[in-house]
Image (tube, rainbow, N blue to C red):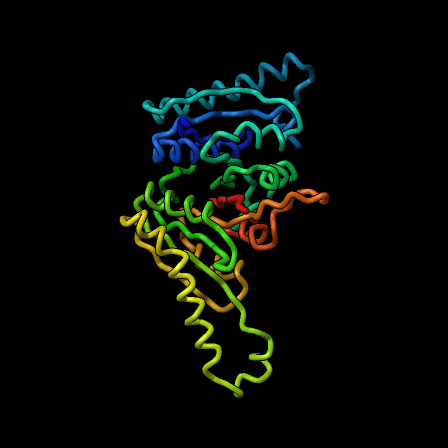
Length: 291
């Protein structure tokens, strides 16, 4: 399968930032870049579009202009453009089904770190079975250089008690492509009884932490063997998982969290840890679907 990075475009500064990030990512992966516009994606179109013909010209202009700009910035990068129809979240998820990842722009919370994830973005994350990366605009125009915020480590939050091979594969690949350290975080909380009566056995909590640390090493060992060039820093910390991941993510180039794939009559959802991290992390956030 040819390596490809797909990015959703809607003409906003956020999608411009996402396209620039995606172009840099495609170069790191020696992949092609696919610029996609999902029809009726816009909740608040930046320009009034009165007719279907005017809208078509406007969308074609967005795709053409962004592709031309990225070709100037990345002359060796193979770039394609296309329009997709249907329910926007499904259309974007389907457009990226054979890609390494889908990249979406997300509005930042002003001076506060984090994202405002629109309904389409959230629905796309819940539907997509490929990694989805949220990138927020660094300023009102989306023009801040990607490399200025792309020098930190990759941070991945995992649950050592559940299978997470897809997440770890993505995390190690990202760290290898970027030639940067990988911080792997597992947050845990002691049983409530230890909070009420720790004096009964002061060593219990220490023993539990040691056991969890050994379990983390066991999970990471085969991946370290597969990616010997990646410097890995395991962190087993007491506290809510999302808070521990966000704390480790300060200065990160990319934060990676998982979303369990659930086939339920109630539909798909993102999960509380992924939801918290993607709404509060300053760095781009990748949500990786896994069993």
